[in-house]
Length: 163
Image (cartoon, rainbow, N blue to C red):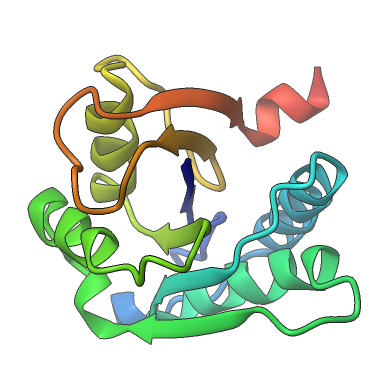
């Protein structure tokens, strides 16, 4: 079994003066990403490899997640410029190219692509995916990423943590 953890970046600023690619996380975004990392860690959802968009807000989201997940060991991260503005097909192609030895892959990206990947793989077309949402999807194989190929193992949002 393979496991894909799809993460939408945490809340980023919309203040003037930042190009979209350079928008940093807000205080809320940093807190949400930290809480997300703690949730993942508490459930043992630790990736072997991370594919992370190279946009500032996704890198910062990963940094906050990693602080809770690393547990004293390094997690390999590939910063992928193509994930910024990627289509669902491109994101699935990148996931599909994951080395066979990787059991758990984390994809840290942007909407609408993150939501589309999670919804397509699980067959949940109405999947809500706000900032910092997480979908943990169980798959049979990295190479067979067709609609409905996965099963939603767990879902998390900052709002679900507050309730």
